[in-house]
Length: 120
Image (tube, rainbow, N blue to C red; front, top):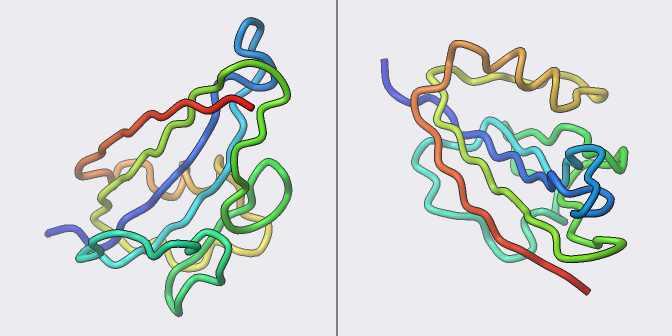
């Protein structure tokens, strides 16, 4: 069976202070992207996903992209893309990273990571 969907997780492992990180902050989770996707349109994270594509809650308690806003220092932002052999379907309005990771467990065919940094 081939790739059925893509999943994107954007997080910051340096929250709140890169010198003393206490948690990984989730900035965006979008799942059930079509496997033939070639990218996201500018502003896609601030627009409702197209039909059949879903967002899980960020650590800000919202859906969509919660952009970088580090309170101190230079933070790393990881963009993690997963190719899945299933479509997760809608995991519900309260789904968070742990729910998405449970649903995708055992279904990751491939993954890629891009890391960028940002500071005020």
